[in-house]
Image 1 (spheres, helix red, strand yellow):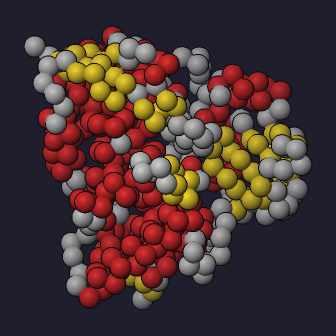
Image 2 (tube, protein in one colour; image 1 turned 135 degrees about the vertical axis):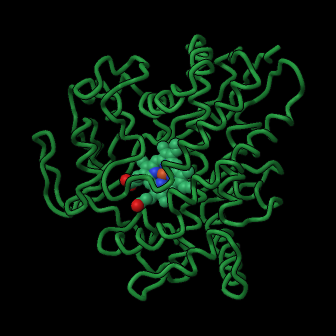
Length: 376
Ligand code: HEM
């Protein structure tokens, strides 16, 4: 998509698609669209439609409801709570890597590491039993892609997935109301601000949002990091020798290959961006992937360069800034450290064999056959 983004930034930075949605490509415009909620609304569904809890969730709401929801869920989802997970994430990464054959291996890294790690972490955070995890992954895939082919040849549609998740999490919430546990769902049930707590449908929406927002995104961050290390083999040694470089490396992967390529908004009134007036009521697509490659902000934007001063906007900007950013960064760092400890190099033998994710929303790989060379 990157040459197209560049063309659009230069020639049609604000472009309407066939009388439909408006697309925005420049960094400053994207940043404004993501953060200026007075003009660009995130609201999608209604707050009381039980068939679409994400439509009413944090990510799809505007102030004042957004402020209230974010304050409430933040009580259960604190940076401290995330830091406390580090030890457990290390264990999960270790178990996943220990389950690989000994010596040098050739595996689908997406199947063996980058998918299961975030799925297990979210499932444990929510307090979901281990044997439900496969279903978890199917639900999140079907929600992002619109449907998902199951191994048995059946299809799981978007609405099947929503219905199943609603049923599943309703059961979980009812259980926690009866008998609280030390997990996020109980934390959400207990959260209170000014005497207000979250409604059943708010909790449901948040659980489903975490599942969908937290899995595939983190998987792709990790896969993209490994793809980058394949392209730049010298970085494997540099990062192994100086682990302090891992966080800035992850930031540059987020910029260079942003897992989330775009986000939607709706204009609340006529508004001008880069000199083009967009009418009230228009649907907007803000291209994060393009903003992160804008030469106006990132010199040599098409080069991968650790240690940039300008921050990327891969996690968004403003009031909707990704709640899971600390968790995604932590998981990526721990997974890379675990790989560096065991292996001395990564190589992707056939780029044709790698399957990109088939949607323009996320950037990453559905499968990535990867060779890992064991340390001797
Ligand atoms: C919001 C990206 C991982 C939960 C967002 C937004 C972006 C984003 C761009 C802003 C949406 C908007 O402005 O409309 C990413 C990327 C990730 C990632 C690139 C991984 C590399 C996670 C994880 C979780 C999570 C691990 C949770 C476990 C959320 C939530 C929101 C959000 C709850 C909504 C926040 C709000 O509306 O106030 N994410 N995300 N994300 N993300 Fe993430």
